[in-house]
Length: 319
Ligand code: NAD
Ligand code: UDP
Image 1: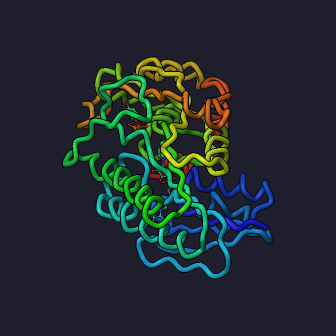
Image 2: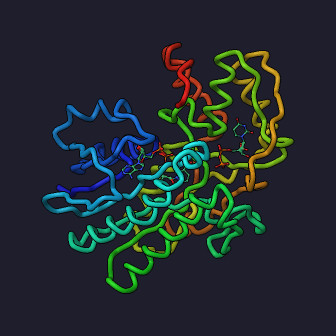
């Protein structure tokens, strides 16, 4: 039986990856320090004999007994609110955490895939973004702590590949959504749905002309699964190229939730990228992958999930 270590296992993407690899017949070792994750995302797995969980901070030395065939390094705060609240931990998990996991991959002779991000392109001057684009990141801006941690992560991963021969894979994830996102993590989808469910106005940052391209979680997991099992070592964009302005997206949410909410305008956060759309040619050519779930379908599934949360959950404030 293949054994896979998944860091960030109690988070949004990590928990869906645990589900997928359990379903594929792997022994899954989940690891998380719960800084932005929640055990309820994986509590259904505790009864599985092929699952075990380590409560551990990956910026500290990582020890896992026994063989490991694969590592997915997904631990990292991912929403702007989170990484602005815990900037040093964000830098550490991308740098020290990645270093520890690459070291583990080396001694275990495991293949490691790291979760990079479209944020390595910063506020992009090339549109749509191809993997060849070097990016436009403000190192000292508020988002720099995340963007630069991820850029360092890619560099050290390539260095371990080149200098130590570690089998590495790099996925550049574009905005992904679905059930198990934290309602109050500040990302636009849970923010808008939460506001609609609470009867509040939808907060658009800036004039709403900035764009994003949203990928449903099952598509993202499929792309990651294929990349892990491919022999391609350079970064690959995984995302849904269906691009929309935030203003139009707010209108879609109002329609979806059938509420009479208005939109209110707040200042655009510093360095908030004005446009973002993945060029997924590489994913198509190398992995035979493309996004299949439309925004309409994915948003309905996501809305159903958030609607099923208790009113206590809905009103919970972040601290
Ligand atoms: P998330 O916050 O839901 O999950 C991250 C998990 O990592 C949490 O459970 C958190 O507790 C854990 N974690 C953080 N620091 C840790 C540490 N030092 N040690 C152990 N565990 C730690 O976020 P997510 O959306 O699931 O993102 C997962 C990964 O995917 C991140 O690396 C993120 O940068 C990347 N990513 C996500 C998106 C997206 O749209 N969801 C986009 C680009 C990249
Ligand atoms: N956004 C918004 N209102 C909100 C939350 C976010 O208008 O309540 C905007 C945000 O400024 C950005 C886009 O929505 O332009 C996506 O934000 P998110 O935090 O989801 O992801 P990221 O900026 O990291 O792509």
